[in-house]
Amino acid sequence: MNGPSRVTLAMTGASGAQYGLRLLDCLIQEDREVHFLISKAAQLVMATETDVILPTKPQAMQAFLSEYTGAAPGQIRCYGKEDWMSPVASGSGAPAAMVVVPCSTGTLSAIATGACNNLIERAADVTLKERRQLILVPREAPYSSIHLENMLKLSNLGAVIVPASPGFYHQPQTIDDLVDFVVARILNLLDIPQDMLPRWGEHHQGVDD
Image (cartoon, rainbow, N blue to C red; front, side, top):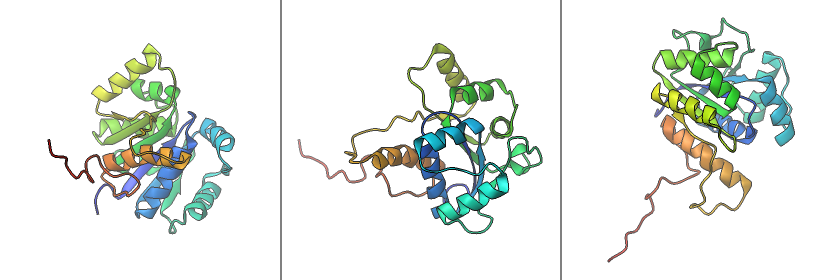
């Protein structure tokens, strides 16, 4: 199996709930165990941008997402924002990779300063301190100098910053195509197979001078 067998997926209150939901679905289809975290702001954004209304209690949320994605029993594990006994709160139990998608600039700031005021921030802090893979997908426009400084700081600490900026060279026809572009890039970074977007040059035939 390429890539991590377990992934922490966190969704925070930036626009782009579709990215997080699509990534969750892809991880489940690739038989990965997903430790799922979501902020209250992200739940509000999700209800605004999609037709998905998540239950607020972790157990009910877990059951809902398992049915929504067709996950096997136990494949998705949901935790509350102060569940400090969860595996993601400790380096001895956390998965080898974490993705925050979408990542609000508030969450970006909290991770950059090591705030650890909730489980999402703590899980990201654990990922950084253990030198594991942390992928952050901010969605904001324009970026302020504060946002850019926080991204630079996190990049220097080993995090990978993937702005939710879909490309157009694959000639997207639908919004789903644009979402898949960003999600495919995340999966490539995780080294998890995906067939949504060919890697650059894969189908290049070559042209004579």
